[in-house]
Length: 391
Image 1 (cartoon, rainbow, N blue to C red):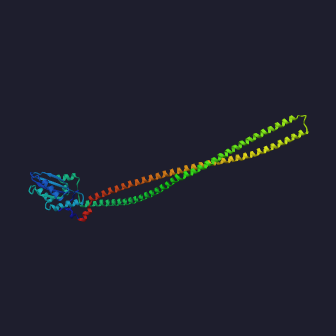
Image 2 (image 1 turned 45 degrees about the vertical axis):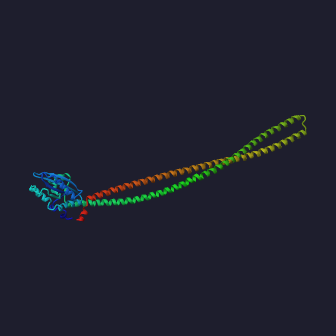
Image 3 (image 1 turned 90 degrees about the horizontal axis):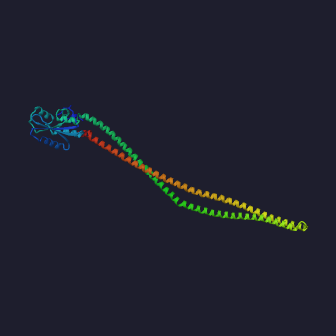
């Protein structure tokens, strides 16, 4: 950008401008004139409405000098406004004001002068220089400001590009997380349906199975009790037969002894001997019959004991089957409980992950919004390229 296009008409090519860009309106008035400040404010409002101003006053020996500083800011639009003072106050700029001051006359009082503040104004001993220095203003050339703002613009462009890249990356991650959450929700829904089916099976099938097992157990117990009762009856009968055999044996022996004694030793004859032999043979036959019956009963007892043992084994097996069914039912219920807890924990993790993703998304959006606001503010402060294109 050519330097001659931005310097004031009454300023030298090597002069520096006050930055932030500042304009000066000046007016000399007689001691009794109190409308000078109002006149300067009117000119400022007429041409630069909304621009911040600072009113100053100095009192030389024979008149009053009123100044109004126009604070145009740091952007290029402010520089254009400051440069426009040379057009609005052609022939009444800084040189004319200085020449009038050097002459030290009050002629021409009431005229308004205007110019863009330069380095000499900043270094001046009057009220204008003091206020400019206190405000932190600096004397800079347009080229220096252009270079600084170009460097800042490049930096901001890089920052903006980085944040745009991060925004795209975060948007892609957010979409991926949303898809992951959707998959988790679908899986959770499927697991819930499976759990409901298992609950239905547990609520409907297991009671029926247990009911059938209970009926079978009761039936087997009844049969076992009946067999035990029959075995007890047979055992009692065998005991009675054993007692009868013993009583019969002793009864026969007593009768034989009595009969032998009744015959007497002297009356023993061959017929008595035959009778005794006959009784002995009869007793032998009866004892053999009794022994055979006892052996038969003992065999029956052994068979019943074998049956009782088989029944006991059957009862033990039945109890084992019953316990196994209860254990299976408890194991199935435990598995269902564990599955339910796993589903609840997984659902809670999915919900926590979704909440965390949402919070992170909000934080990222807020950070991007703040960055955009900072870029917008800096662009408002550094609009060099807009000014260059307009020039």
